Image 1 (tube, rainbow, N blue to C red):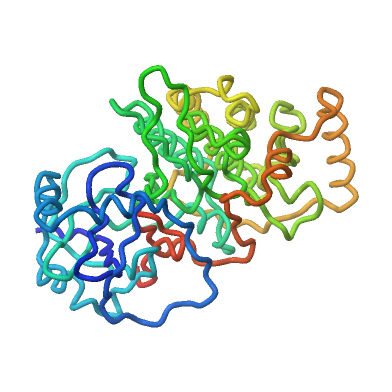
Image 2: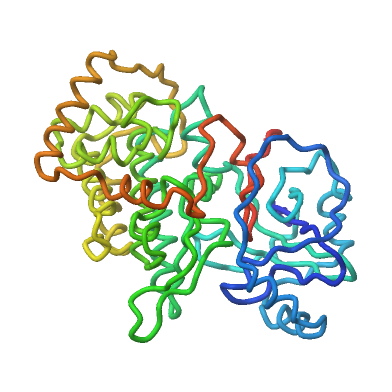
Length: 428
């Protein structure tokens, strides 16, 4: 009988607080507070998670124990006992501790694979829950490779190959397309590299749905909501107006695709001037195949198809369009990216290639940047939509990501808002 790796999520809270596992989009944004089991000391200095909508918390707290029990029972999820989860984690042993989530510590455990339900292949599975006495726990599948953010920005000894990057982009795009095409569309709202988790074969899955919202219904064209998300990924029109649509997710996907192409963070304050914002710096090159190599990840040099890279760059360019309706749908993105996987002439997906990154000389960078700026600004003398949005809404709830390295492949650290982000087991 095969063992199944899982992340065990134990919310902090009291016996009277509801578990954050009730059905519905609003329910996932609630903050649970309870007594957690003893756990190893955690790293200091992590950012606090974004504030949740108080209305969601208030709504959950109106549920009685019987109401919540009926809701959970009808969800189809497996109901674990505390004893089962203690056994799966060796009594919440420190050796099974993965990291801190927004609602409490996260552990790795082993389960009978018969309890794991079949679900969409590009969303992290919620396996089950425990709602017994004062205990409130959620059980998610364990993602062995950790987050995309870790592999792109924190693994300094190896670089993701081109074929693997395309596979991750296609998988993440399929996850978003699934959410957008549901009977009741769901807008993810916080699509970023740290929320894309990877299986052992680098299959990408979306995690952390704490900010997700139901899409507009009827004749509505958008959802009006408080601006939340992550600086550098949020669509400019969403920052300016609070109007949320599925095309807001498309913009965020374009940013992540740009990170995959360039190997750079969406925002990096350690870089100079215009290079600090990835979209502002790289977008002028995306439709210029003869200049694209200037923004491609140096670690990929000579190991990718120039034709495939140019087509992927065009997809990113279209996703980053300043007018939401001119962006493609996520299904169109999937249809554009999937054929590129066959064009790859890289090593097989899943293998790492060590490269010694090389940076162009400062003089070459200045010349390249000036040429790109001249070409772009000839079309539009105004500043970029993203820059305009940041300037106008400097105090919005869109938070910034620290440029300093941190273990984002840990279980969402202090950024989790509903489902935990996991990190790769160091003992694996």
